[in-house]
Length: 221
Length: 89
Picture (tube, rainbow over the protein chains, first blue to last red):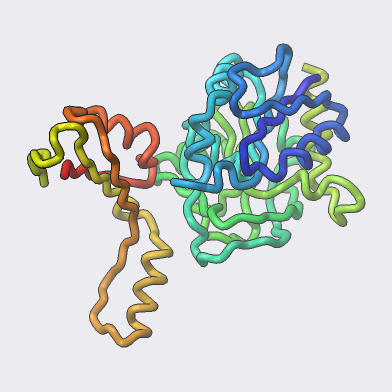
């Protein structure tokens, strides 16, 4: 199974994500944002964390209009899988591939620490944990305060599209939402960083289960 | 408010200012922090502060307001959380 990791100027978790994908058994190719096509045979697109384009205008806004994004949209429309982490989540909301937006943290501070999460919405991203399992993953963001209008929030909950919730909301996110799924459940955007908790040397391997299950599910598909 | 393009600019460019604000009902923690800071400086009666962005552009003369609105919709504002107002200078 093949994964692509998109690299924007200012991405800084791209190599960490590639390593996490490789350790789960995926073949990984890095793809520069100016490319207009994904390599052939890509099953999963990873949009990494960082500060694409210096967070100018709004986090993820410039990246959402980069040349590669049309290919990512086409991949998703074909039923391909995509995972956006942190800035990658912001990019996915800016492209409209996921609903809502990420606002400045309610407490105004950049937050960099490990937080508790509860796995929920059924998907290949969360099944490795099992519903309502509590895990811990690091967050590192200034703009992770998930916002959507009430109707959208109701729809996300009714459709079981909240992938992860904070057990102790650090940033003011609506309904404690830390990650959301697309309608077909194949696109996940999340603020916490599973790739930063995916091997023993990280001191936390909760993130590795996400990648292991994801790779297994893609291989079986 | 609309103004006619400035004739002294020789008709080559038009200046457009776009105001982008968080929509009503979207929490603006930066505005709140500014409000608290004004209070701390002794300014009484500051009821609410909202912080937004102003984007000024030099555009080819005759660029339609529809085109500027398209720029706002596609890039300058995120209409999930922000509203915009176009001012032709």
